[in-house]
Amino acid sequence: MRTGHFTRNILKGNDGITSMEDAPRLCPFCADRLGIADYREGRCEICNDTCMDTSLADTIDPTFEYHTFNVGVVLPKDVVERDEAFVREHELAHAHGIKTALNRALRSRLSERLNAQADTEDPDVIFEIDHIKGRVFYRIKSLALCGRYRKEVRTIPQTRWWCTKCRGRGCEHCGHTGKMYPTSVEEIVSAPIMRVASGRKTKFHGAGREDIDVRMLGEGRPFVLEIINPKVRTLDLEALQDEINKDERVHVYDLRPCEKARIEKLKNTKYRKTYRAHIDKKLSNNEIELIEKKLETEIRQRTPIRVSHRRSDKIRKRKVYKVRGNNNKTTVLEIYCDGGLYIKELISGDEGRTNPSVSSILGTHVRCTALDVLEVHCDL
Image (cartoon, rainbow, N blue to C red; front, side, top):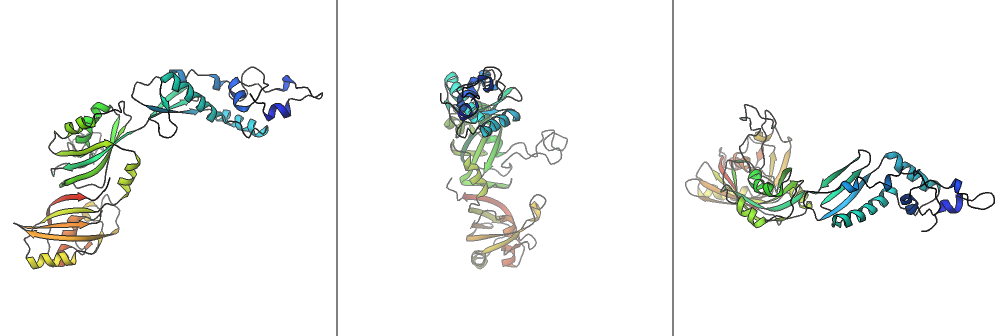
């Protein structure tokens, strides 16, 4: 073991002979990481022997599935301050900091005892050994699954819709369920997965969202389901997908594991979409041609009246790239446009808040009677 600056510079008496009476009182761990060869035994003046106490680490015995782990140590503030002061005072610039050294030692100890692989970048669990509270906390990494879903009905929301009166506590307004609607895409997708993964809760992230009365068709909408604190990480995703798809209201495709980084991309990207909008009138061929010509432009859309109570009031600029219309009993418009464009208001005009609109182009009020998302143009 090398001798540190403290030993070389401080422990010399007047006669040039090292005086052990002036040597620091250290535990073997602190002496080793600081490079101090000569030290006195007794309670460590830096860590109070905390570094030699493995009793908390020895209690770690996870009952959940994990493949990789990391360690984080929480030490009293005064211990860290004493260590920094000691290093600074005695110019031990190359010594390992107390937390860094202790984490490294515990990773090695636990890897051998638990027969698990240490991972400092992206572990399945972090064992937080808290010497202030005197306990160990398990910080379990969320399990993220991605895929696409089709919503075949017009009666369920994408995510849980908590009761606006009781905020989920349960009241007469919601029939003591805490929810505005009995179920959602999120609940239908997550229920079979949660039964197997035994997580604490889920978070559902979609590439945008459709209204309750709008179907999501085509190849489906990309989503990520985040399972919080899962006890089981190895899942038979094909079997789970089959179980989900027994519910005819929602169908899931290409269910697979993914990184949490995908969530931010889903939430922060406006994906172009293709819609099919049924309107309440049958238009002439000339009217359809006029809409196809005039609507393919930039749309200025103020926050719609129907969502103004929960969306900031501002003007959004979105572009319609292509419109195609055809007639049956009524007219159906297929619209390819930027994400974030409110299609129902693109049809009605929303009392002039959306311009141009189908209504403003025709000079008469028309409304959307049914809406489907045909495609979310997303490569995830």
